[in-house]
Amino acid sequence: MAHNHVQRPDGQVSAAVRPRGKLLVCSVGCCCGHVEKGVAPVDIRRYQVEWERRRLGTHVHLYQSGCLGPCQQANVVLLLFEGHPVWFHSLDSAELITALYDYLELLIAAPKFVPPTELLASCTFNRGAGTIR
Image (cartoon, rainbow, N blue to C red; front, side, top):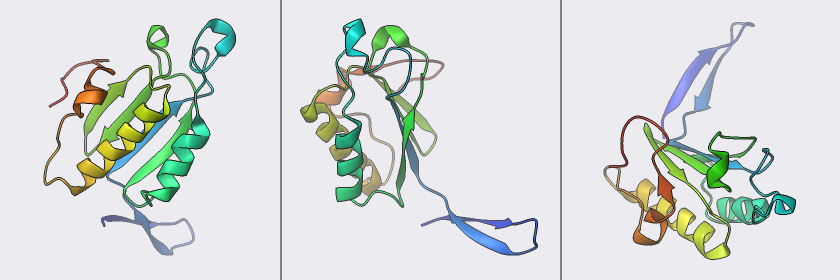
């Protein structure tokens, strides 16, 4: 597990864990999870429970996020893993959230980046330059 050594203003040096990934779940934005707008709810509790149950805290940090931008996609999740951005939309079922965490465990165990699994591939989209590879 990699660490960043940071010197604080008081002169002490601390070692901060450098996670391999970040998982940002849009759950408090303008569209995602707003059932009154016709969008499925975001089950942030399931994201938290899976993250804790699988003990991913030292590998991937989980963030409950505001708007990530592509509102027309709804229930958006951004995975940043070792420099690879993977954008997901419509992650609004227990099956898809479980598949996302299975994919995270696959990434952690893999010697190099692998694209999303077949089930998740249908929920990916390109938000900017580059492709998922």
